[in-house]
Length: 278
Image 1 (cartoon, rainbow, N blue to C red):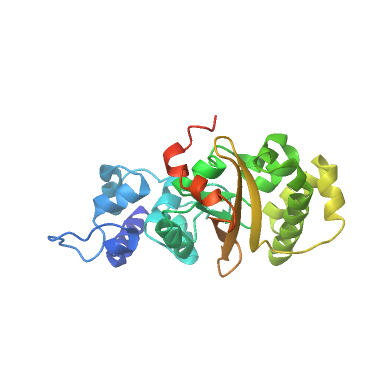
Image 2 (image 1 turned 120 degrees about the vertical axis):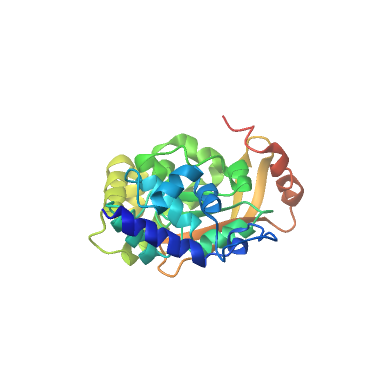
């Protein structure tokens, strides 16, 4: 752990970010070319006093969650994020709800303000949702451990399937398994995350085991889905996908299917919010 070097590194990354890059106004009397310390603290969800201590190389060792939040706020690349973790004496996070969101995908997500959108990993772990995605799909940050993966919940928790009409369940199951096999093949064979997920599902779900044995492979790129919203009813949407360069993360966004009344009802999401979800 090298807190002094960590502080220097944070300052260097802060200086290169322009306010417009993260959706902040430049203001008429800005004294620094990059972000101010209070702005980084705001973006990372930290107190200004705590962040100032970090840049001074003082204080206690930051948690993995705080480092991940700082990496997102400063738009760090994967290598830069790993370096940040090493300076703080922490092992870099690879996947899971606290993992680092790809900077380019995070930037695009921030610009999608009028359509539901979220960033997930290739194992279907949600990293971040915009407010409309929370209103459409429910909050995903409440799930921990294996349940953080929607694929795991799909095959082990019947409530996860309430989002789709029963008639669509077989097709969704096949698509999830084919996508997971494609993701597993792209990863290192020694990757513990995917091996654990697959072995757990093979042990828990006969349906998954049967589909896995078929060896179907297909990444999910563009889907037309039917979703059941607790307040809006049945919605028909197009789910579009943008992959990161290494395929480990995906930006998903939803648009109303043409020829349906879903556009008018999706427009109500901002009004309804999450009040219809328990």
